[in-house]
Amino acid sequence: MCSPQVILAAIGAQDQQVCRCHQAVPARHSAPEAGARTAGRPAADGHASHDHAHRGASAAEAREAAEADASAAPGRSATSRRTALRAAVAGALGLAGTAVLAASPAAAAPAPADPPAPSDYPESVPDMLRRGGRRIVDLTHPLSADFPVFQFYVRKPEQRQVMFEDVMGFNSAEWTFNEHAGTHMDVPAHSEAGLATADEIRLEDLVAPLVVVRIADRAERENTTELTVDDLRAWEREHGRIPEGAFVAMDSGWYRRVDDAEAFLQFDRAAEVMRFPGVSVEAAEFLIAERDIVGFGTDTTSLDVGTRVEPLTHRTLLTTGRYGLENLAALDEVPERGATLIVGVPKLRGGFGAPVRAMAFL
Image (tube, rainbow, N blue to C red; front, side, top):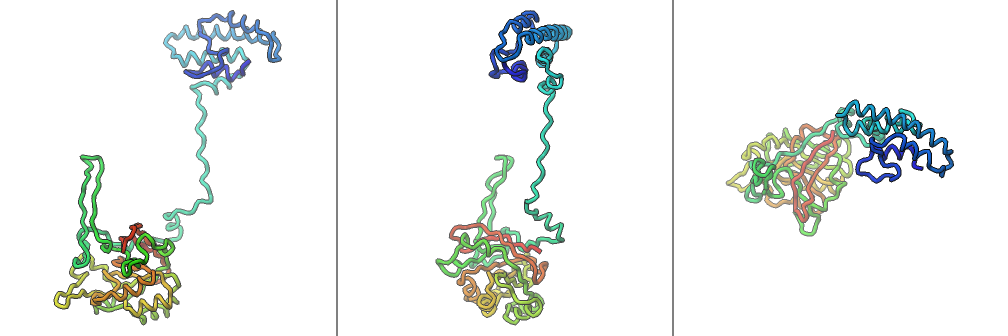
């Protein structure tokens, strides 16, 4: 004999495979027939035959009540009739009413509660910033067609929209730009073939303690000044030794000129040079040999001072496997020490440089 739960499931089933001996009995079958079948079945499962007869009698009474209820409401849905039939059979089987209600389609089980949030998840960056009174400073200029570049070396960026929302359902554009336009990275292969390309820069070098050395006052007076070893030693007297693995950034205040290409590049046609600050070769050698930095950067368009024809500062830095960042922005919003530089850079296979999204975590 099937369990009462299986019998009730059979009554409510639609297009399901259930036990054939307990398919739903149509309401037109008479109660005495159902009772007689139950009473005459041999006791094969250890239950007494008279117990089946007793339940059959109860089923007859419950079924008569269910049929009378159905006749009183001829427009009742099939679901209501099944519910009444389940109640009748449940009465015959001696089940509690609560069990019938739980099995009824109209009494759905409550939705499970959401699981508790794991306590070992790392804190989100917004939560970390709010809790610690910290912030992130974007050190990156927007890249656009009007970003100032020295066109003798670098082609101006171009953007061409090729897909349109009103036609295709989405927008898309094609960009054409040099690796060294906008805020970007110079990688070792930029100075010597065979060295690391953009896709080979170590991830651990893209997150580093940020050291900011300010020469903006001097650069305002002298547009071809350079970051020197004396500047670095003066910084260390105030803030302590430049840590190993740091990234050093020169803040000349030049980034504020980026919306004026002439003021930013200051190309001297007579001398065929540009006039903007840079990093001296001696300072580069000191930072590499004495402080073992991961790289350095400027807020101008080159690591070298604009008047230097041969890119000696580039070579000094890049040929040792380090990287440089050019056209950095907003360094004046970052403290001299205590911030962390984070650089996002695309893995351009074989790239001699790449655009970046540089930021300082304060």
